[in-house]
Length: 75
Image 1 (cartoon, one colour):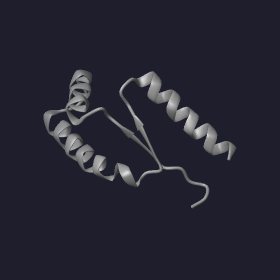
Image 2 (cartoon, one colour; image 1 turned 90 degrees about the vertical axis):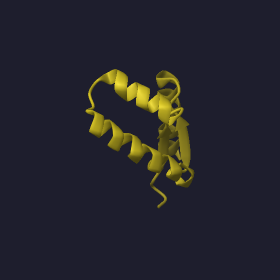
Image 3 (cartoon, helix red, strand yellow; image 1 turned 30 degrees about the vertical axis):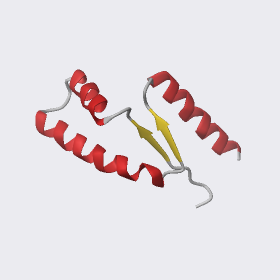
Image 4 (cartoon, one colour; image 1 turned 180 degrees about the vertical axis):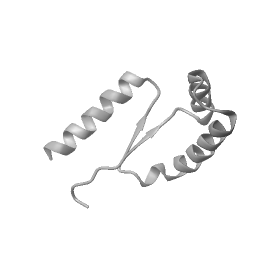
């Protein structure tokens, strides 16, 4: 619809995502595996989104996301 924006926030890689999640120490091994499996499937769907924000550096990804949403609201 016209009043919708789709944005996929993409990690640099599954390996990087795994490392980030592991470093947080908030996930059990089973939950970590489930999240990574889900992320792998979700990453295949990224091309269907209107925008893809690459989450390499948090501050840059956040700024890009803010800009996309701001421009969408203004349009």
